[in-house]
Length: 101
Image (cartoon, rainbow, N blue to C red; front, side, top):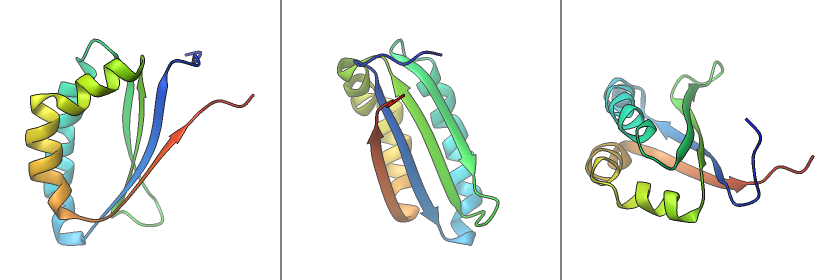
């Protein structure tokens, strides 16, 4: 995949307590499946740290700002991401990134 300037790319780090991790992974899978069906979602991958299994790293690429806004306003993001998963996060770090080479 070759990224374009208009793409919105994010790497996010979400830290959970060990007891909340199974729930976060279960709901995260549901959110990922719904998000990947969005017309402007180009890539959506979740990763788990080897060093800290409670750390989930999400890599997201959206076609443009409109596609990102569609995702943020989607029912699945609001219901699963905001209402179910986010309250269980111990910490959140979101970085918008761009290609440099």
